[in-house]
Length: 314
Image 1 (cartoon, helix red, strand yellow):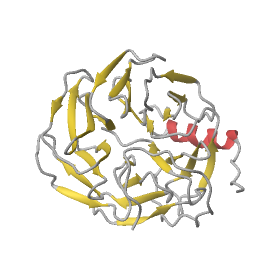
Image 2: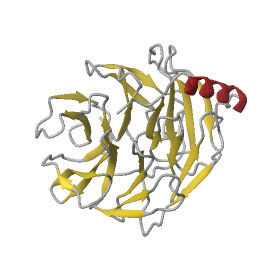
Image 3: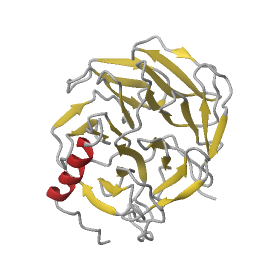
Image 4: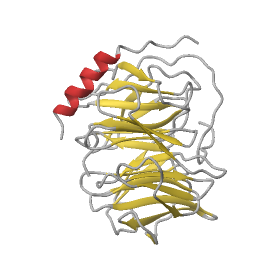
């Protein structure tokens, strides 16, 4: 099918550079997704937008692209596409400098400097039988990626293009790092999902005593709370660190909280379900849905991850 054309690299580069300068009944969910291609186009986005929303990046598994949206404008209009360096991308992350990291399906992580549409660096994972599906960045610049099939989290020290160590954990998926440099990893057991914490990004991990039906994404909000997606209950549970029960939940039904990200002000929560329905947007304070960002996605262009520039501070 025909696809919307990207605006020029110059225009997107200008938008991102300006942004950087101003900021210091659906099918059952899967652990990770490798869907077929094809399908009809979705309608225009319905998200109203908020001032200062920044740039939204959404991972489009097919046809191997990252869609860029002006999240702060009405309708969150599609403003461009990144295709160079992308290979059936999964999750995304943005560090405080505005650098974008894209987890690809081919055992690489593509790194894009602020304002650039071509990667300035490629990180290489030493895969076994699996495929890494999630990427996140620690406050010290360490890059982490999770590989469910090989039951490993790959660790890249700041500046390294090859992994410097690994963490062994059964079928990991979601990753998040706190301001205190504690890495949180959710993983699958024979009875459901759990979360372990790795202080300093090093093992051994400490189980948090939390149980889930089917793991999804993880995030940390600016108050230091842990957001844990449960695809089995179709909700995001929000925990105080150390608590055994969530103090509130955000329902994402009928979609699944596969991966998600907060904007810089923790005003809006953007959820990618790993399904062909674009990005769902929720008011983070109330948990109420405020719209969808679907322009540029076909009915089987699976949305595998989201990130915001600027990212929510931790």
